[in-house]
Image 1 (cartoon, rainbow, N blue to C red):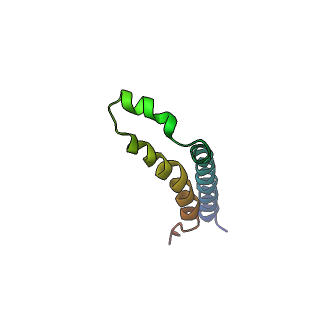
Image 2 (tube, one colour):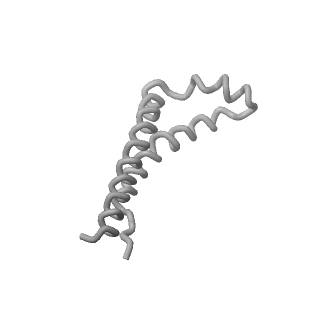
Image 3 (cartoon, rainbow, N blue to C red):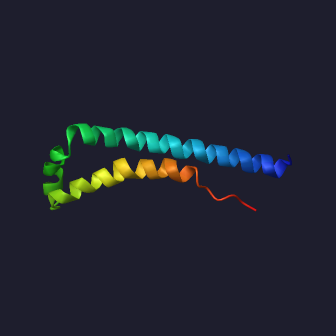
Amino acid sequence: MTIASTTSYRDDIGKLILRVAVAALIGFHGVSKLKHGVGWMAGPLHAHHLPMFVGYGVYAAEVVAPVLLIVGSSHVRRRP
């Protein structure tokens, strides 16, 4: 292994750890939303003049996005 390939490998491992850590943190929030629902968001959304259905976008952001982050981490393009 050359120094350049070792550095590239370490960069890839670091990015993988970062992606999985961020996905886990966001995922914990998503699990909370699945358990307790998004009804509590009605007050803050109403205060900002936003409709309640915007709260359901939280499911996409906090449940689906972490899954895509973890799945996407296994499909990283290799450099030539």
